[in-house]
Length: 327
Figure 1: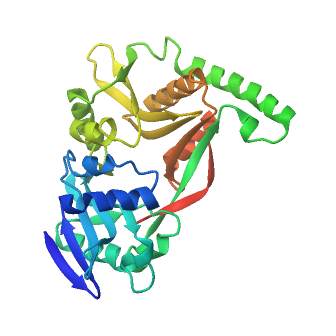
Figure 2: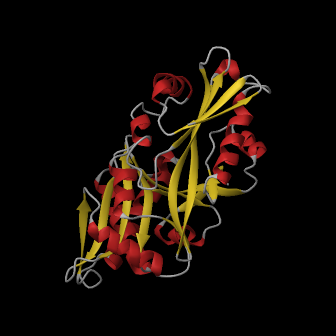
């Protein structure tokens, strides 16, 4: 545990903020209502890259919690060399401590400086609306534009004109049926099969080794320990996994991780060893989305990345840029 006093605040770094657990959850409930209390336990245990680092701003007079931010360690592979990155998140400041003299700017800056001295090669974050300036002033000088790639399955919510929406619904159904025949027919699927997974096992470790050895890239670790913690133990969402495998060896050719919330299917991770596998998995997802009566499919990605742009052939289009990823 480390403590530093800056003006009227004491800044504390810890991996186990149990003393302030109830205050952290209260701030989340009040200012980050979409964050479940169980996220606290998830952050404090299980991450194979290490426990989350908690940066707490305490009022020096009352010792009450004025604000907090976390850094979640994440192992990356950069051209066959391992590097430790950090994901900054859960940034919250109590309303009565906001303003120029409050910890809103000092807290992320303190965390950034601490990380640079303690083995982190890079920090990144996707700020909440209205907090981008805080991170820019703290030292996050670079931004990557993010946007949603959207595939409408039912056009009624996207097109105001009723007749046009019905026409597009029929056209999309014909379009998807044609592509399903092209990519999921018996000839293409010969020697391959789909599996719905409820755990990430040794096959994912073998696939991960093949994935990062395929070409020089920068990619976040996706071994089985990380995938189980990140997705299956995550309290935020109920994730589902579909894999494409070889029948002879049961080796993974690729996988996709997604959620279904109401009438939306959200793609969180899509990994593959070749483009053909990617297209097969996308077409399988479209089939699942229609079976589950979803209206829309979503994928959040860089607005400049070429791979998602190729999804346009399946009827995806990209929206305007969302709030950026800062690093």
